[in-house]
Image 1 (cartoon, rainbow, N blue to C red):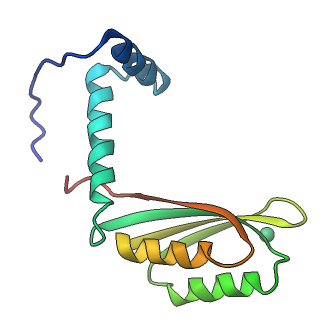
Image 2 (image 1 turned 180 degrees about the vertical axis):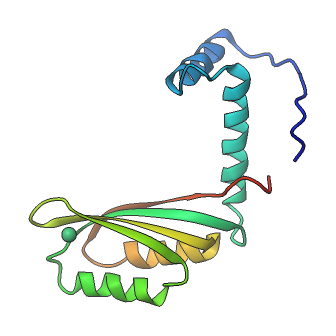
Length: 140
Ligand code: NI
């Protein structure tokens, strides 16, 4: 992708522009409208590429579960050991006497990462979880 900057004019409703400026301000004083719009375009392109099952991606799965649920920690471990090529790191936090928060970092195709996430989130005793996928954006 060329890094040459091209100037062009954008027209948008005033209230939408104000919301863009507010968003840019929340992200830091260095952000200006051009950077804010570039960020939005990159976000959209990454989101589009993560819709492709063959796209190489990095995924983070965040899930909460009750570790007292029968056999759950063993079943979670079994799934993770079955996918040790894709799972590159895990973080486990003991939230309270019963609940655990686990964050699992993965890399692989979108299809592989989603399959692993579904296998883990589908286990009985997992209360909540969500997968976020992203890319480096370098091929965009
Ligand atoms: Ni725990």
